[in-house]
Image 1 (cartoon, rainbow, N blue to C red):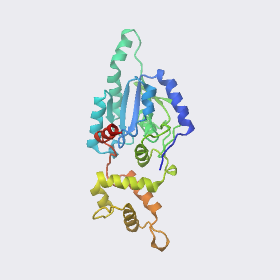
Image 2 (cartoon, rainbow, N blue to C red):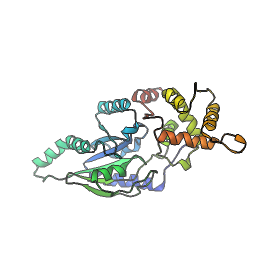
Image 3 (cartoon, rainbow, N blue to C red):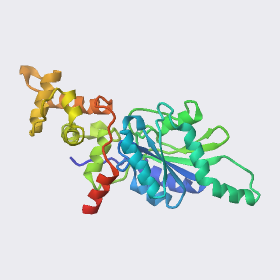
Length: 290
């Protein structure tokens, strides 16, 4: 399965982000804490260049807490400040403004020395689809300003939003990159809902997911589907789950499409607990061998 998704509004968004960059002091880069590497758009590095940045690992409640700490330490080693947040529950919202003020303190000190009156921090929020940008903005603004949705691609234009007197936020549509050089990145984005399911082969995605769970969270997989051991043949796993959960067609045959939908839905709804799909040491060990 080759995964690609680059609607026309995303190409337009890239141009708009580039044009608006000079208007902001800092970039808030929102990533999915379950896939902090795969949910970082490499185009963003090209676009924002040396603009100050704060990486926000959203949906941290759905990710493995210890692995999230590893990612925050990884970003710190790269000279990038990162925070773990949960925009849906409003966790970590106060820390965002404090972190932005700390990152920009030297810039604002220089402006003050030049006689420039204090003003609100201007921040641009960027990230891939379904990362939770609109939910974050609504939490920070304490009202429903930005349109939200559970499917990627809801925000399709830019808007300025005031957050009290201390910040002004520029929302942008989610931007994926035109081509995934690493299809495993595409798989991880698909598992976590960043790509519309209608564009996916859910059976192939489920095979990838089952193999990942078997390797990294085997006890959770066995417990969830009442397996003593995980069969080597993934078809046997499908058959077992289908019969266990009643994903059947006429004649008692297993409906593999229904099994795929079930597994992906249960992973996304945390039936397996909090999961992180990549760790710094694994990602960059793979990078070095390519």
